[in-house]
Image 1 (cartoon, helix red, strand yellow):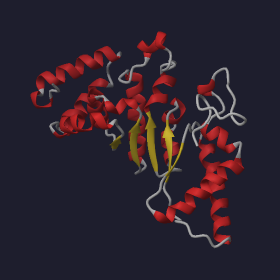
Image 2 (cartoon, one colour):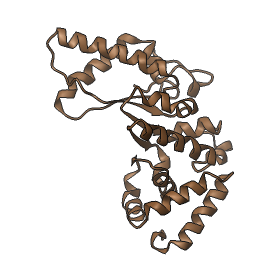
Image 3 (cartoon, one colour):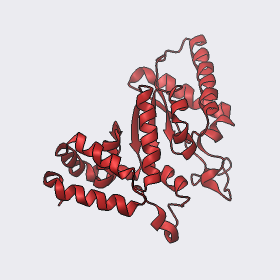
Image 4 (spheres, one colour):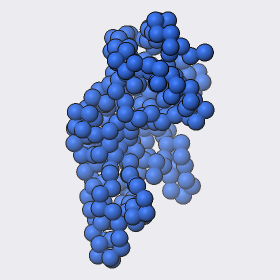
Length: 244
């Protein structure tokens, strides 16, 4: 469960002075092992009825994965003892939504089966910008080179360790962002249904090598404004990809 922060449950979670960096998500789960194990038990019991993957939110350090795996083994042992069927090979993945996770993604990848980049939180943490605060909304820049560099690092480390790397959050629903993300090598993008056909058509009419070059150039820029200018130039020189 990704509770805490702005997701408050009375009598359990509490309001904090800095909730987005507080007692939430995996931190809350690991300090409440019985509640966490109840969730894991339910997931493993459900695993025999279809394809299931487990994803851990708000990972910052390797130890959080290691401790979770210990609890998973305890849950499996209990289910086996009780002769309750479950799938033994449920993929375990993590959200990459803290700068720390992105920077140590090579180490993290050795302990999991897939990554999902949580773009909403990653952007606000990197830019030190509360995405709900209108007064500093100008700092919430998905194509800021600092964001792109961390995404690039994460994707490269995922592929180096032969695991899948996807992206969720609002970033993937912008066509311009999608071009850069595919150029960086993302395997999957989560986006709003209203943008699905537009972005699919855009990507179908794009050459992957051209997008890789575009992404490489974007990584050398110093601002989102410069990246946007680069994308505008790309559209002018690649007429088939122009969005009307």
